[in-house]
Image 1 (cartoon, rainbow, N blue to C red):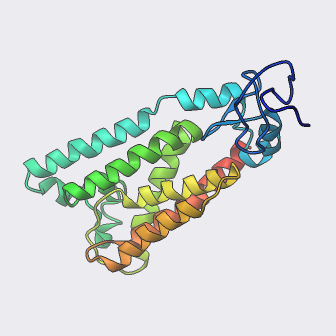
Image 2: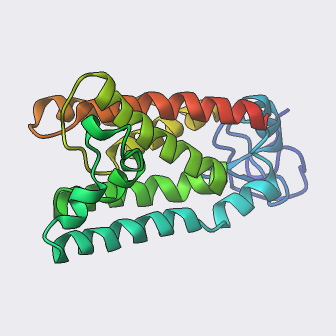
Length: 240
C-alpha cells in the first residue's frame, strides 16, 4: 500500500513527514510505533512480531523505553561499594570474594562474588560503563528477573569455564557477565531483524584482547558469551 509523499500511507488525509525505518512508508502519529531507532509502521511491527516474541507493540514498547532499571543500578552500586572496600582494606576483601578455581567446592559463593571485585580503576570503569549501557537497554527489554538471570548465569558460567579449562587464575571482575550481556544483545537484535555486524566486531575485538593482553581470564569471556547466548535464547522461547 502506498501513499503520496507527505501523507500517511494508512490515512491519506493526514500530513506527516515521519518515515518507517523498515519499509520507508510515511506514518502519522497514530501509526508510529517507537523502535530502537526512529519509528516503525503497524505493518512492519506485525510482520516482525513472531521473531520478537511480540515485544514490539506501541504501548508495550513505550513502557520499555521509559521503564526503570533498578537491578542495573543496584549491581553498579555493589560494584562501587566493593571497590572502595578493596581499597580501604588493602585487598583483604578481594581475597575473600575473588574466584579461585581450586576451592570452588568449598567456597562456591566466589562464583558470584567475584563479579563485584576488580583489579584496578580502569578495570571497574570499563566493566561499569559496559554494564550501565547494556543493562539499561536489556533490563527494560527482558525485564528485571530475566536480565539478572542472564547476567549471573554468565558470571557463573565464565568462572566454571576457567575451572574446566584447567586455569589456576585468580579471577576478579564482571567480564563474564558483560560478555553474557553482549550475547543477549546479539540475540535480541537478531530477533528484531537488526544488523549485528557492528556488534560482532565489538565482541570479536574484546575477545581478541583477552588472548593478547596478559593477566586476562579469556576463559571467563568465552564461557560468559556462550551462557548469555544460550540463556537468552531459552528465556525468549519461554516468553513466546
